[in-house]
Structures are given as structure tokens and as C-alpha cells.
Length: 285
Length: 268
Ligand SMILES: Nc1ncnc2c1ncn2[C@@H]1O[C@H](COP(=O)(O)OP(=O)(O)OP(=O)(O)O)[C@@H](O)[C@H]1O
Ligand SMILES: [Mg+2]
Image 1 (cartoon, rainbow over the protein chains, first blue to last red):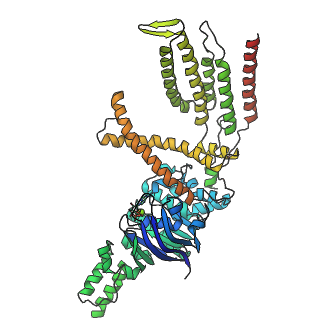
Image 2: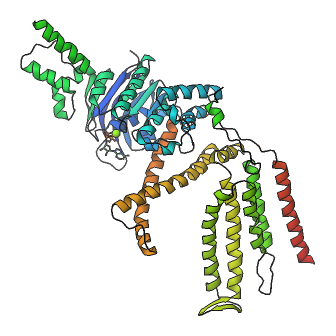
Image 3: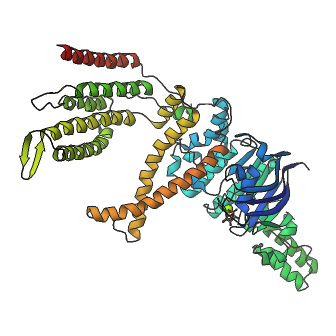
């Protein structure tokens, strides 16, 4: 598989801090995969995202050792604006993701395309499409500053999706959303996979990661403590000690297995659990 | 057929004055201000007061009304008048010098004080007034497009427009914060001292919030391709109202007439 981003022994500290926020991190991000990034508060997830996009160190300054390569080129070598079309970035805080110069949601979402010089007709078409996708068409003529947190979050997501970058880095896009909204955002993001986009998503809601991600990256105190296939990572009980909340079904599966129940494998999603348990029951009959 | 969003965001103004091209409005503002200075040099009565500044102010309500924005401007005028009144009182009562014009108990209005008070306060009224007209009849995106068209740098335009937007948002936020402070038991109503005490703590989150969010906003812009070096697209297009030439002509004419008259007064 193609590797689109690679981190080589990256250690990074913010200015005026003594403890690095990311310690000796090496990881390869492969094209077309959906990565779920998990870890406790302050474990370095947002910093990791900022490194991928080059915001650290170009904006945050601070000390970087090691290398962050996007398509084989160091992020330090990219000029201003060059990464914008390659990597879409949705921030954790929805309230600061409003450009501040547009007075309708439609124009807000269109802003990125205006900056890229996309023709007017195409902008209209793409913005309408993405507003439908993110379910914000009813807000199109509202002022972005008058939206609720959840609505802003959708607008922020739409504003980045509309640019259609190859890689998407999304930091907790559902913190302000209700369960239904969260599920629908995940559905949108998983559709990106069909378009062969690479997605790096930070999210605390482990069940959704279990359902949608391909790979899981687990952070703790600035280090990558586990990385790999979601099935493997999310059924690993030793991660519980590292502060990772595993899916309930995985914990149940592990407990049953320890007690000698012959499970075919440890389920991590509800669907898998259904399959494993029903097989167990029907098998026993 | 259903209108496209691109069509919906365009601004079509029926009123020809309100719909003037922003740079023409700016010219009107500039010429009006120049006329203010010309008029302020004409001293009337034995106390040498710049009284012509007072009728000159009447131009503004007339202009606002003709632009169909009188009610919108009224609120801003109230604020401007209060500032002007404070200036007037402070200047007229505090500046010594010259004969006493008026005696109110122990307060004395001296000649010099009255002179500066009238000039300053009406100058403020006039010039602030004409700006009120311009800002109340023009939307932010019209300004931003006009500034870019005039060749102003993309970044500088952004700063200008986001500042305008920010002022609106700060106004809204300050209300939210005031409410929050009140919920915590801070008095925000009552006499001036009580209000002042409530005012300063409420500024801290306001300013801090603005600073932090502006830092993050830089990244948001970068993520939206603000820095991409290419020809930008504009969904919004400015329209001319059709009377730009006439308005420019009239404004220039009035300025020239006033100037000639002023020079004539000097030499005559
Ligand atoms: N701008 C900054 N300046 C200095 N230190 C920072 C900055 N941003 C984050 N840190 C520190 O870096 C560490 C990692 O923070 P980071 O924001 O990456 O955590 P996170 O995993 O995203 O947490 P959360 O789940 O709360 O979003 C923390 O110790 C934090 O205090
Ligand atoms: Mg974070």
C-alpha cells in the first residue's frame, strides 16, 4: 500500500515547555485507510494532528526533531498554502472555525473554493452537494455566528469536505453533537473511504471507532502505545491499564474467553458480537 | 426556476443612494469632511464661533432619510450625540480664557471655552454622522469587495472586514458575558460605580476569548486555502446604482463652491 504520510522518530515540544508533547513517534499513514486516534485528554492527539498538517512547528513554533514526510516531502519544505489542498483539517473547537468574513453559511462553506479560484458555477454545485451531505442546507442563509455548537461543527466539516482533499485530519468532530448527529457524521466520514480518501480521526467514542475505523492509534503521555488493526487493538485487554476505554463487547468477550467459553474471536462491535454469540449458541445445540 | 444560492447572496438595492458604489460613498464622506474643515474656519458673532457647523449637520439626517436608512441611523446618532454633548460640556466649562459669556451659579462659560466646545463637538457630530451614514447603508461584503477591487491587499482587506464583523460579535458576546456575570451574582445594573465594577471583570474573558480565537482563526484560514497563491473567485459581485457620476459631480461641486466662497471671504 502507498504511504501518504510518514513520521520518523518525531519528538516535539511546544515553546516554553520542558516535557515534549510527542515523544519519539514513528508511524506510517497508508493511502485510503481510516485511522482512529484515541487516548486520554492531554495525551497528544491534537498535537499529532498539528504535526501531520505541519502546523507544528510552522505555526506553533517549538522544537521538532525527526521528520514528518507528506508524500515523501518534509512538511517544513512546503510553502504557505501548499498543503491546504492536500490535507483537509477540521479543528477540535468549532467556534473558531468560522472565517469571520462571511455572513451566510453558504458563503462560509464556499470560502475555501473561492480561495482556490474554483469557477463560480462549480462552487455553487459543490457547496450545495456538500451541504446536502452534511445536512446543513436548511441553514444555508443563516449567519454562521448565530449557529449552535453542533451546527457550527457540521459547517466546519462541510467547509473542509468541499475542498475535496486527498487526506482528511479531523479532530473530535462530534464533541458538540447529539448521538444521532454523531452517527451521521461518522456515516459521512466513512463514505469518504469509498472515494479512496485517507482519514485520520480523533474521537473518544470508542464504539464508533470500532465500527468505522480500519486502524487504531493509541496515545498516552505523548507516545504511541499501540497501533495496528482495530480488531487486534480494541480487543487487547492490556490497554485498559493504559487508560483506554475498550468497547463493552470486547471486554465481555475477553472475560468470557478467560472463563473458558470458546469464542471464535473477540468481538469489538455490536454486529460482531451478535455473530459470535449466535454462532456460539447455535453451535452448542 | 429556483434561485441559486449565488444569486441569493447578491445585494440589489432599490434605493439609489444606499446602493451607491462604496468608493463613491467614501468620496462623499471625504468631501463632506473637507467641507467641515472649510466651514469651521468661518467665525461668526462677536465671540468668533464656528456656527456654520451646526446647520451643516442637517445634511446628514437628510442624506440618511433619502437613502431610506433614517431609522437604522437613529440609534447610532444617539450615541454620537452623547459623546458630542460630553465634549461640549467639558470643553465649555473647563477651558479658561477670554470674557465670561455665561454664568451658571459657580460655573462660568468663557469665550475661549465656548469657541472650542462648538468647533470640537459639532466637528465630531458631523464627521461621525457621515460615517454612520456610510456604514449603515453599506454591508460588510460590499466593503470587502470594493476594497479588493481598489487594489487593496487580500490580507489587509481580511483584517479590515473581520474587524468590522468582530465588533458586532464582541457586542453580542459582551451581552452573553454580562448575563453570565449576573448569574454569578455580579451586579451589572445600578449606578455608575456598580456598573464600572461589573464592567472590568467582564472585559477579561471578552478580550482573552477574542485573542485566543483569533490565534486559532489563523489556522482555520490557512486550512481554507487563504494563502494559496492564485486568482481568487468572487461569488459576490458589486453593483452600481447608476447615479454615481451625478453624486460625485454634486459633491465635488458643493465642495468647490464652499472653497471659493471661503477664499472670497478672505480676500474681500
Ligand atoms: N499550544 C500549546 N502550548 C503549549 N502546550 C500545549 C499546547 N497545546 C497542547 N499543549 C500540551 O501538549 C500536551 C498534549 O496536548 P494535546 O492537545 O495534543 O492533547 P489531546 O490528546 O488532544 O487532548 P484532548 O483529548 O483534551 O483534546 C498537553 O500536555 C498540553 O498541555
Ligand atoms: Mg485534542
